Image (cartoon, rainbow, N blue to C red):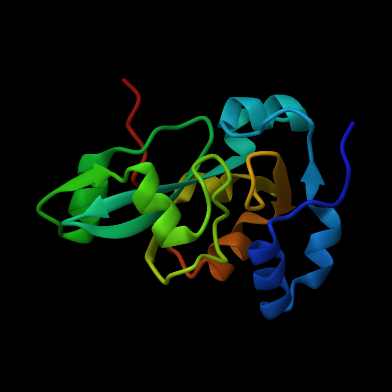
Length: 164
């Protein structure tokens, strides 16, 4: 059973500020965690590729958000090349919370505490609707990927791991 309430208060406020208050009514809360793409896809009843993962990396120590479909993995080397950075690593939980204001597993694609550079993998655009975290590990919301990319102020890039 799901309900239509439960976005993190900071994220609900971000939606209001962006003129997306009606999206609050479409947030779905699940009793089981939707922390991972697999958990979210199972709860929603969709393919993992329709989940938008919001992942924080550190490019030469500076946080960057990468939006990736739930069926793919980020190629850190491609992110490094895209950013022209010397080194890119996965950010730890403290950096994620400090940068976004949210815990890992609940990071939404926008509405963060600080402004960061955002890269969105082109694979997200293959869908009419994707689902992203709404600020908690139990809440998600649907959005057209082009709108999601626009609201996140993301640059569309190709940073997924290539399959053999």
